[in-house]
Image 1 (cartoon, rainbow, N blue to C red):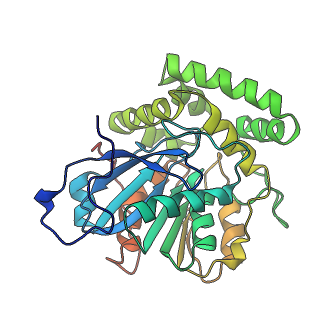
Image 2 (image 1 turned 90 degrees about the vertical axis):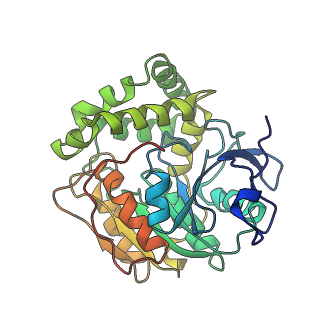
Length: 324
């Protein structure tokens, strides 16, 4: 099967029917790693990179093709190194994602684009905003973590015990973390729905309401399975990257940034986004008191409208996403 891009470099102005309808292909990083890329929507719309959560993959929950077109968005998602079908980059930092995003953008002939990160994708979206200021138009980080050992932040305050335990192990015993996540990935592959079942007891009611939706659960299960289908390496490397210096300073960000965080979040506490908001110049911040971690899924459509320049403000969209 041919997994080359669906159009020539530079996206020339020729009829759409001249392009092969490819939604998935392999891009190459600057050091010749393979990057699995998913394209959604209409290539003639505004390009937005969607950076998935932890664990996750390029097929994570997102709006339909029709809704993306209505919101003037061409969505580009990819498996971070070690996830899904992308080759691993050992000892990667959060900052390293910017080089991969730039390589994909170059291959698609994109000069400018927006970035959106949800959960574990949040720090990676902020990396692109900080390190690619001439190319990123706008950035959004939903339920993001703040940098490890962020000055003035109690990093673990309000965090679920399971995450406190995982990050504590990651910071002190890499081999123990590897063993733990390899075993967790094996359980997820054997029963993809098990990860949601494991998280549910710690979820506030606001999150339980969302994951109770059959369509949302199906999309999350597909997302976890695809991300871990080959190994747990991407998950391991994400966690280690979050517990290490990120490789950039969020205060250097100069592009417009939108931060959203449900105040009831226990997986990445709202204080993390409050810390980010205090340090990212001009950041637009919304911290709804009745929402939690998975509430970010319902915000994606309206955030995409803001990222594409279709609207000047983000309006909550309280409904489930539908598979493409």
